[in-house]
Length: 347
Ligand code: IPM
Ligand code: MN
Image 1 (cartoon, protein in one colour):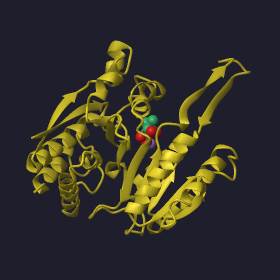
Image 2 (cartoon, rainbow, N blue to C red; image 1 turned 180 degrees about the vertical axis):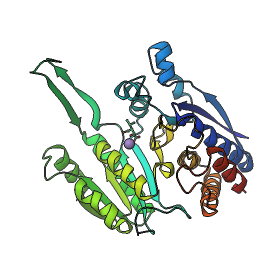
Image 3 (cartoon, protein in one colour; image 1 turned 90 degrees about the horizontal axis):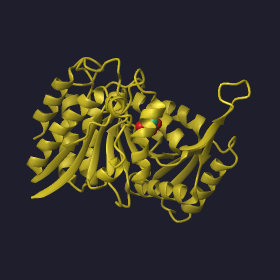
């Protein structure tokens, strides 16, 4: 029997609840699919930071390297640990160290879910660059606390980084409806963003079957609201992709439905699967977090592992659940109720 080693990092707040839900569904999907998960849970979180002074141990990355995939809940508890510390101590280093350069985020309405838009028939796949760009962490502060204080944060765009994310997006577009929207702000940012546009144009020559259009981020934000059905694959830099995917989450009914996969396409290290939402301290421990985003992220993990049938089974179970009116409205159903419904729908 095939066994996959999965590192579970529930993290903070509702991350714990939704990871447990996803794990229950994944375990059941595995036994139906004739394979098995061997899970190991890591307590790395803000609580761990308060106890040890670090978000994960020094050898954390090397420990994770031995796993087939990582299932993550959410990181952050700003009342206790600044977000800039917790995120740069756990989530962001994993994405970078494991070259998870493609952050894939699907945005479509699940059956029975009422989005805020009139449009219902959209199916967008956002692909966000995940290792460099505006979130490279390059920069510094001088004259701190004085009137002469200076803060600089430099975006880093490498040809390797830009080319590989665009190529990945072209390939995804080819496997879908053949349309690619490349998002920059090259009318205002004349170095990095013009460079991105140029690389997109160069690659377009290799993909004559793909209809590629360049958009500015501001126009894309409007398009995702006004004409989301016109979009297929959307590719953007780290910051722009971050913002657009919260917009994507909003038009699909909320963060409770937004799944994501941090993929290392070359498979030289494990990939990581996590809901787009954060730790939501305000509703943590109320038991009302929607686990659908985490479960859907689990389905993306199954797909990445090559367990296509199990992935489809989980996606179908989610769709049956929401079609039955469960988990469709934020806060209406308990986490456990939604999880049990997905488990029951998992044929
Ligand atoms: C996300 C999150 C993170 C990101 C934060 C928490 C650093 O917002 O996954 O979208 O921006 O990457
Ligand atoms: Mn985000």
